[in-house]
Length: 309
Ligand code: NAD
Image 1: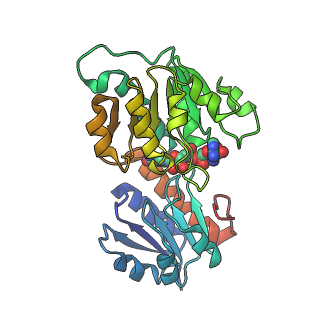
Image 2 (image 1 turned 90 degrees about the vertical axis):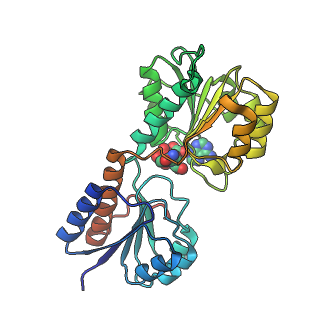
């Protein structure tokens, strides 16, 4: 019996990506099952029951979904952040969970740069703005997205500093001409623009708040293309209230975004929808990588991109 690979996407992949995924799956002798734009959890629970492998985007793979997936051996989140997958529930069943690191990073990095310039130029409304050249760009977490933002910042004439406690090799920073700092405090203290690229984990959730924001230089902007969960929203509100020079911009609206918009006008901005990775290129790359990783896993047992080891 051929392996069934379910692509379950509330927000579908581009057509070209689906065609590419189908080609990879069928060439490997598998069968592609598509569940797109589902509106009810029950549809996912039913579809997943027969699947050997599952490809999702931001779709929630909860313990309930995993319990319904009797044959499931692998879940691939086409994208970087995998906080939408219940890792503990998957691990308990021995199900491998992977992401597709690097495949959408450039899209996110370009958006981060765009948001910086957008805020520097009064959100594209009349008035005197300022330039990003010559300013200090702090990068919080120097992973796939952080590195690309760092390089783009350098190319735009910014002074780039970065902090990532899990990267012990200084060469990673040196290669990009980026100065490495040893603490979060040091990073925020120097950053005219602070671009967030930490994953949402138990450790990072709610970790960016009042104290860090208050330590930033005059006129600083916090750029969040990571996750809204990493922000302490009350702390953000308080810092923006006390410091009329601070700005906040994101592609992932805060829980209290309406209140922020109302209170701070032009100093805050959230895109109407999460859109960091929403490019044709990222969509295609992540989708194809997910399919290839699944085929490779069944063929050779390759678990290189497993996140629940
Ligand atoms: P990545 O795994 O390549 O890099 C993450 C980096 O964070 C790693 O270098 C790691 O060492 C570092 N890190 C982990 N915990 C940390 C901590 N407590 N303090 C400082 N650094 C820490 O991931 P990536 O591809 O660069 O993506 C980063 C995040 O961006 C993702 O987790 C995801 O949540 C978010 N993201 C958002 C969008 C979007 O559409 N806005 C798209 C892709 C990714």
